[in-house]
Image 1 (cartoon, rainbow, N blue to C red):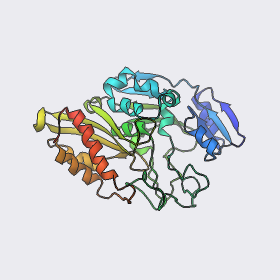
Image 2 (cartoon, rainbow, N blue to C red):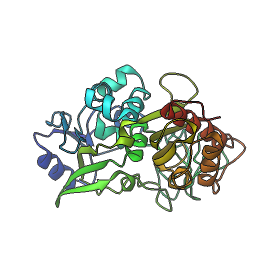
Image 3 (spheres, rainbow, N blue to C red):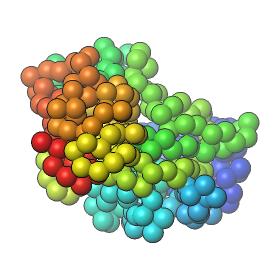
Image 4 (tube, one colour):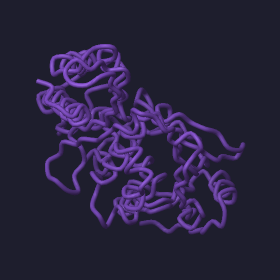
Length: 334
């Protein structure tokens, strides 16, 4: 690890000013991702601005039944918070599906959204990687590709976004509140992360120096009836092969109940949490059954790009999406 300057910020504006003034500066919160990259030589900032002590640790109820979550709320605390457990089940379950208990005790809400890919080539500084060193090439293309993206890929990158929380927030249309040198702005969750295109080194649409301060969720029937399902190699401390955050609102009961609203977002399939809008459109306005879910997932994945190593993902997506919607419907969809 190279020598660097460490600054502990006393307020958000000071932190933003410090990072904005130094192109080589980075924010440091829980450090569960960044510190690993410092050790691996993947990240080499000139200075770290520690924001972990900022008073952004509250989970507040909003008048519309929503919640406002401080960026420094620990994942373990947020997962069990009553407002999240009762009103936003997908978020609570996504957090509990992520990492280990020890890491959840350290990781923060804002930092979780800014995780970088766990692609093995990105984390190995001896291999070419456009995300780590733009223009050097993508070793994953033609290399080990079991975890690679199948949607929204480019010739420059096939890496996937690792956050479970981000998938749940994408499904429930969260808003990310950001403070930058020009003041505060609000970013829809679906616009926070980028597809790789020709610049996979850019994970998000945030400008240098912009700091996530809060995440807001609006209350709704579909948020109250939501869940998260993750398929992975082992039950703990493993990233998603594929995952789904789902919310459901039905008109009626039993097999004839019609889908009035549905939200689907997938993890493990793209450079960003993938909002499955085509699948949602197939499901709305019709009774929910296994055939409808299969048709919906197939509509969303019709342009998927797979290899021999990750060709299992569309079928696995059908499985996890069916599982999630079966749980929310409270009956067998067959």
